[in-house]
Length: 198
Image (cartoon, rainbow, N blue to C red; front, side, top):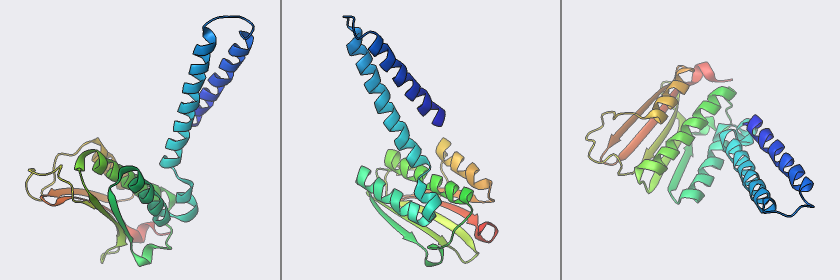
C-alpha cells in the first residue's frame, strides 16, 4: 500500500514536470495531463482512506472495543443499517495482543461487508464478550432475508470471506461458525481468552 502511494506521488510529480516543459507549446496535451493528475490525486485519497480503514490508528491507541465503536458508527452512517454494539463490562479496558485485536477487527469488517452486500438486513446486533468457558466471543446477528429458504440452522456453503475469517482465527486457536435461519444469520468468532490476554 505504501509503495503504491509513493508510485502515484512520483507519477504526479513527473506529470507536473512534463506539463511545465510543455507550457510554452500549444497543444491538446495540457488538458489531458491535467485530467491525469486529477485521477492520480483522487486515487491517492482513496488509498489513504482504505489504508485508514484497514488499520485504524484507534485500534493501536485505544484497543478493540473503541475501534469497534468507531467502525460501527461510521458503517451505520454510510449504509443506513441500524447497528447495535454491546461490549461486555470485563472487556472494556482489556487489551489483547495486537494481532488478536486486528484479527477480530477484520472479522467485524468482513462480517458487516457481507451483511451490506447480501443480507438485506435492517438491524444488526454485534457483541464482544467473554462466555462461561473463558472464551472471547464476537458475534454478529442480522435480521436479513438473504438466507431465506436455506432451511434450518445448518451451516450453508461458505464463500471466500467466511473461509478467510476462519483461517485468520485459527492462528490463535480460534473458531468461526456461521449459521442461518428464517430469522437471519449469526456469525460467531471465538478465541481462547486465557491464552491471549496480555
